[in-house]
Amino acid sequence: MAAVSIMVAFDAAIRSHRAGQLAKAERQYRTILKSKPHHVETLVMLGQLLTETGRAEAALETLGVALTVDPARAEAHGAQGAALRRLGRRDEAASSYRRALALKPDAVEPHVNLGNTLLDLGRWGDAAESFHAAIALVPSLPEAHLGFGRALHQIGRTDAAIEALRLAIGLRPDYAAAYDAMGEIACDLGRWGESIAFHAEALRLDPKGPGFHTHFGIALYNSGELQAAEGSFRVALSLNPDDVIAHFNLAAVLLRTGRLAEGWAEYEWRRRLFGFPDLNTTRPEWHGEPLDGKTLLLYGEQGLGDTLHFARYAHLAAAQGARVVLAVQRPLLRLMRSVPGVAEVVPMGEAVTADYHLPLLSAPLRFGTEIATIPAPISYLGVDPEAARSWGERLAGIKGLKVGLVWAGDPRPDDRAANRVDRRRSLSLAQFGVLADIPGITLISLQKGAPAAQAKAPPDGLSVFDWMDEIDDFAETAALVSHLDLVISVDTSVVHLVGAMGKPVWILSRFDGCWRWLDRDDSPWYPTARLFRQTVPGDWSGPLAALAAALRETAQG
Image 1: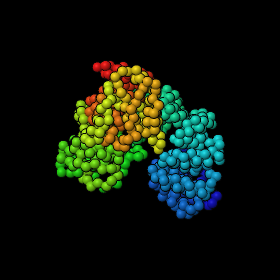
Image 2 (image 1 turned 45 degrees about the vertical axis):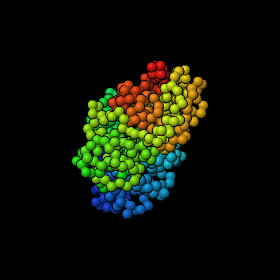
Image 3 (image 1 turned 135 degrees about the vertical axis):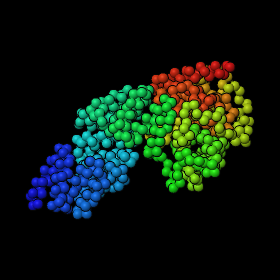
Image 4 (image 1 turned 30 degrees about the vertical axis):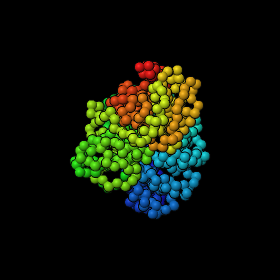
């Protein structure tokens, strides 16, 4: 095929490709390559087409030929990045995009693609820089403003993120992905009505947009519309059965509504989320094999409260003859030695020789837990006798009902998702001024972290004893709690500590409360728990008034 003929054939193939006639375009590209196997432009375009049609491995082979012929071809490196990203090889994809940019720094597409890959990797700041570079090159590119807005949102620059997304919509009024991103920001801010409206518009514009039904479902869930949320998650999964976020949130709906068997199965998808621990072991996970004479490693995987909550399953494993080793976070080491059925407690990450391992939050699935079979002993945590004696002496002179108090969670700077929930679950100590005129009670702080400083300036009429500076682990907290009559707490790890000790615990639960509390005022997990729930998102006045009335009645009784 002569050079002119190849150019004509190549132009025709490009037109077919851009018109969406992909099968025809592929035939045209391959015809050119039969005549000229090393025609780099055709190899690059065929590689792109193969990625677009879900054949990323074949695309890498084709692009490998192109890069062997011309290692300095920026477009080939960019196309290679797209194939690698499609295969989930995101670090390699980022490297390919950087090679493309090193060869052609003023090419806008690799900047945008690198930014999207860095978003996939959770490298929000780096992603923002890539999108900013793209905008500097082409200010009118809506995709760059969309990516910039998403990255800014993740690094906490909410106002700037909203402005970037508005620019994207201004440039492309029918930009469904930008409306979807606006909905995510509104959801994170707790403005769920706005979030639902944004996501509904995104779905109107693109009913099959990637992740759109999932994000819509999350907004519905947070608004308390559980049935509608479930429907959205199931639609999302019909479009993309591997949508991890949809599976994870469907699990929350199922567990919150008491359908535990299906819920635990869906909850296994959490393992594909960022941050799930890698044990780096060749030993098998336990799937119900006989445990008699075997060693089972149960390990924490999420927060301190989750470890406290699900450590109860050690007893069930031990009852089957297992030697149970429990791997936990360091603040729990001393306390968890008291859990029935536990032979050894080690820090998370320490090498352990075991026959099987199991993450703690998979134990309910393995043991077939339903509402009626939740293992809920009154108490499964013990207290260090010497520490308990010491605290007993210190509290001996305090009169009236001794009430422990936790008013806030502890923000984690490196986990923005957790921080968004923390803002919704937390109060200030000042809001507990409604308890100030209740006679016969003494408040004792159990608050740790930055919010603990509020105890130094309590609201008028509210006196709070505070010894938490002296406490450095949960065993010591348990020793203090053992001498209290009641603990009042927002939904933090202290709730699980107190509930697992069998002490009365009153829980202030946000409107979009955790699935584990179901939609009840009591808890099948903790027989001594009582919940006071928000009925209006963000409004604690109702739950606090109900709690104050109940506390007054308890103190008088």
